[in-house]
Amino acid sequence: MSNLIPFLILTVLISIACGESQNLNAQQKQGKKIYESLCDKCHRLIEPTQHTDSEWKLAVERFGTKLKLQQSDKDAVVQYLIVVNEK
Ligand code: HEC
Image (tube, rainbow, N blue to C red; front, top):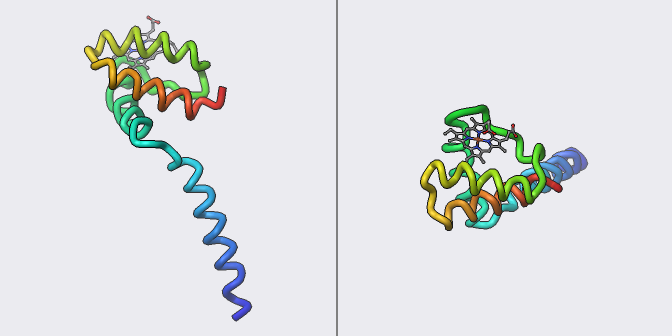
């Protein structure tokens, strides 16, 4: 019985850790997908933490337009980046 306790603690810790990175809403998940599939075409994928919210808005507007993304896709990418950049 006491063998179960470390197992339970581990399970709780894993679910907390996973919960944090999976805490994206549908729009942000869509943005992540677009970001990871299109924004690495010309350069390596830039870490979201490397730019502030306002810098990301400008960059997504600029490169998103180049990629001919719809406004709703650009919005999704921005929402994803600004929720994960921690700035
Ligand atoms: C058509 C090619 C191309 C695509 C596609 C592209 N980029 Fe870029 N990106 C560049 C080039 C070239 C530079 C460096 C020179 C400059 O700033 O114009 C750059 C620079 C950047 C920078 C600033 C430099 C840095 O290291 O932080 C950011 C931010 C950026 N891109 C974001 C994006 C995002 C977000 C997307 C997807 C929406 C994207 N890029 C897609 C060509 C591209």
